[in-house]
Length: 171
Image (tube, rainbow, N blue to C red; front, side, top):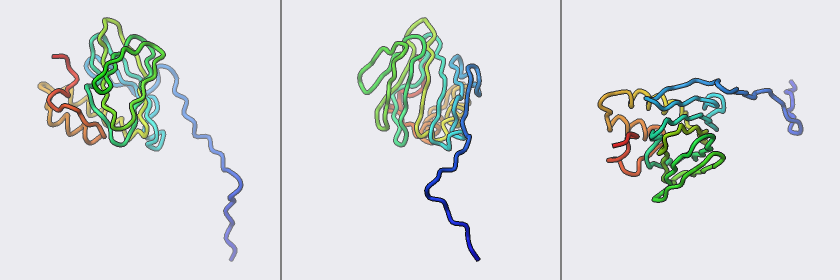
């Protein structure tokens, strides 16, 4: 009995592209912050996550935290984003790309009276959509339970630098 030989010299081409148009993707509204899933963990086999974030005036995206197993990239599309990296702050205008590799403390917020729109990229994506959905549930509770928030953070490879100042609300 003869088994078919594997062809080591020719590629098998597939059409697995995803084209996500403007205004497409699952959208979550967290208080006043909007997150739209553009390229999900499921679509990319956990390799990449691309999310559109809209931060209204004076909104905090995340306080200082880091990741152990994924890198995070920010692309500012509209407005002026305040980026905190370690103990420094930067004003990121449209066109700015900020890359925070694993173990780099970072946070971001909108300190202006204008809306900020950015693209957030995680690689690998580590099922980041579960984090955003859990964040939606956790931040919708009054009062916010810091232990539940920390458990969610840690499950999805996020580690606050200061657990006494990790909830993304202005004091």
